[in-house]
Amino acid sequence: MSAGSEVRGQGPPRSRRHGSGVARTVAGVLVASAFVGIVAQGAAADVSSDQEQISALQQKIVQDGAQVQQLVASANRAQAQLDTLDTQVAAAQAELAADRQDEARAEANLRSIAINSYMDNGDGGTALALFSSDATTLSAQEEYTGLAGDRLNAAIDAANAAVRRTQAATDELDKAQAQAAATVTQLDADRQSAQAALDSDNALLKSVQGNLQALLAAAEAQREAQERAEEEAMAEAAAAAAAAAAAKQAPAPVNFHPTPGSYANPLRDVSGLNPERIDQGVDYSGFGPIYAVGDGVVESTTNGGWPGGTFICYKLTDGPANGLAVYAAEDINPTVSIGQTVTAGSALGTVYEGPSGIETGWADPSCDGEAMAASVYHEGRSTAFGLNFSQLLASLGAPPGVLQNDPPDGSLPPGWPSW
Image (cartoon, rainbow, N blue to C red; front, side, top):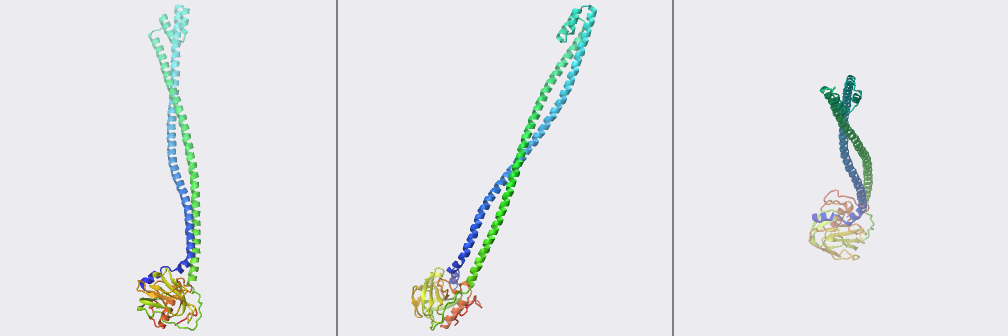
């Protein structure tokens, strides 16, 4: 029946056991991936840190480079100013030398006048004092002698003033020159310091870039190692899954010995019996007692992998299927217990009108909750084991199930009884 079959196909115990090795392998893949992921995250954090440091260094290098350029420009301007001052100082010194020559000529003229006056007046003692180079004394002597006129006094005053003016200009230029030279020296020192900082930043940037390259190479190596590990683990998982599938697809070992004995219709007293599809076994709906097919021993009554939790499994002890196991599952209230001996007249339980109906068929010999057809069963499709059990029931007088696909999925093991 549809609802019951959908629930039945969701995960019986055997599938869980067959999948356990694959699950462990896949779990190993996940754990390994998680570990490598953590390492990769650490590497990514280092790469991110280095990239941030590189970005900061590049910005600082730009700033330092701009500072160096500014200092070079300032030093060039200061040097140009110093060169200008050097020229001006040279010109002032030349002008001072010319003024001193004018002063010397004025003194020479004054001496000449004094000598002439001496020669004219015969006062050698007073005239000899005119040879003094002191301008104040010369002026006093001019007044004393009365030989120098206003023109000579003006020439002397002008010469002295020119000397003082030129000397003052020269002194100012010397100060400006010294200050400019000091500025040039300081700017050159600042430039060298900034250049050293720039060189240091470039060296650090190169180091960090090298470290980043190493980290990227290590991260790439880790990624490749992770991929290889995942590929190997997935290959192992695929191999394990293939092995499990191969084991699952292989027919269960047949260990039965046909003996004399007869079987009876186990559904003979179910009211409103309605056959439904053939899948792992045969589905029916109805209500009333359900019996054993023949003599046997009960080995299980419940299993959580089936709707309603009922899975009555008994192993036949005589007849053509002696040694095979039969199950009756789903909407049944069991009335037998494990280890109980049953016959074709023994009621296994009572079928009730539940949401799933019942299913009966060949069970795995272990009676662990699996049907014999579990290895080949796909939801809603008929199996060779289900068809075989439907034929058995039909041979005993029960209505056969409805075949969903022809041929059915799977095949019966060699020697399996037919009806």
